[in-house]
Image (tube, rainbow, N blue to C red; front, side, top):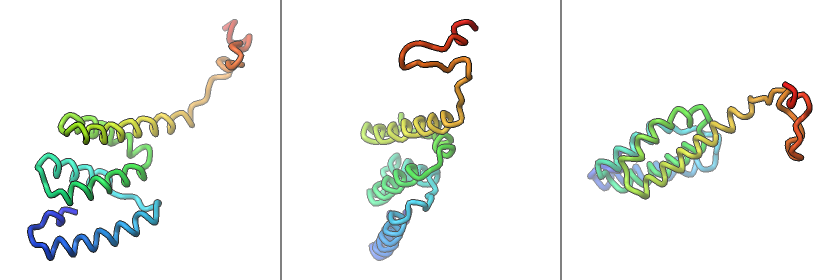
Length: 138
């Protein structure tokens, strides 16, 4: 993706051909994991340094794809980096990053809630508003 900013048009055209080929393959196979850390770094650097619009746009596309495919643990690990990046970007990019942060928090919550078991003494018929007697007398 970095070569999309190369000044020679022939090089950029070849890179575009390659990116389009990769794009077709990656979109067809959702099981392919992408290096979300590297893409985030490339995207952020290109935006902050006013890099090539090609780099920014393709990195944005692949960043979204990579983050959607990342495991909950990987998303959680990226949260501090994403939160720090929010303050350095424009409003549109802040919205994009905040969406990723929220998705990461939600996936983390869903990941941990699957392994969380409510203690037996706290279980009850909460829909009716009546906990079990065990709960009331503990």
